[in-house]
Image (cartoon, rainbow, N blue to C red; front, side, top):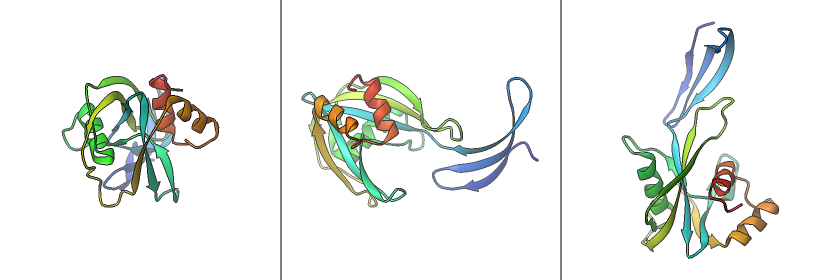
Length: 168
């Protein structure tokens, strides 16, 4: 078996398989997904959290999420977080605070999401991608906690970001 060979190269991800050397020098077979990275925003407006409800074709339903997206070429994590917030919600953030980084599925994927929090200072029309089906709504922290307890928020990156932000 080769050290590492490409199985698939797409626009968003690449898939590889092969042997990796572990810290103790043993070899282990791995299948891995290479991801360009992403940024997520925990947007606040007057004490409420700005959420999007986005249809996700892969799971065949709409779910409550925080605005997030992958990096554009040459874009910093902060620039990505601000751009995604504006594109998906129309909200414009004030000063950003980086509150953490998460790996979504480190057993097989290197996707790293940089998490930011900001107060929204204004709003303009959203500029969504043509394939995005999104609605926007704000929830109080108490409503967010209730939604989470009732299984209404199931997106792992959103749940992680809410914890990093101290909301849940």
